[in-house]
Length: 293
Image (cartoon, rainbow, N blue to C red):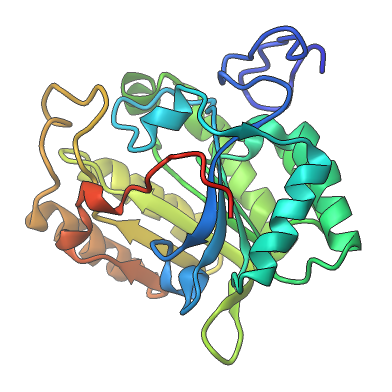
């Protein structure tokens, strides 16, 4: 593909010849594809999400837990037809959904892959698991193909976004992107077994020393989305990658996390997944070994 413009970086790379700023070539590397039990309960369920981890990322987070694949290439390169077959394979293994992790750099391949998979018998929901740094026009191309949006809302302030992820304009793009996701899929809907079928789940990872950032993200949700929007307020921060200076070089305290939870509830946002502090464990990071299926 020439002149890649599918994310806010708009780097214009000819990815048939070179990687974009996201580090991704024209054909995506799949670092791992398997049943995954560590997503939100309504996604992992009893059998697991059919998670496909892609390499490459359009952010540069100092604390990235998946840095091996966000800044590197592991596993097999799959074209649209092979990705469609992989989705059907995961469905056959019993996955509750197809969970596409960091999909944005690969939209040009995922669009035909999803169309082919659905035409060939894919019936389980498709989850678009994204860092939130998206273009609305790119998301519109996914309408009717994605059932569940799972975005991060990492930052409100440009200072924090630039300092921690190299994207001062993060909120400028994430805010309208999340509103577009809400427009497409609405409030989260569960089946009789409590498994997600359609809708939006907004994630926010509470960072050490950044409770005010969490409050800002929750204020945005309360002011702009339905009160019954499902939120995943995460305590699982673990210092890794380049998180070597304060405050990122330590774990979140119980008091910091409780302050974020209390503020969430004070806004009337009660549909919230709350994590135990024990979730802050690198053992929950998948092994990126290129395994497929």
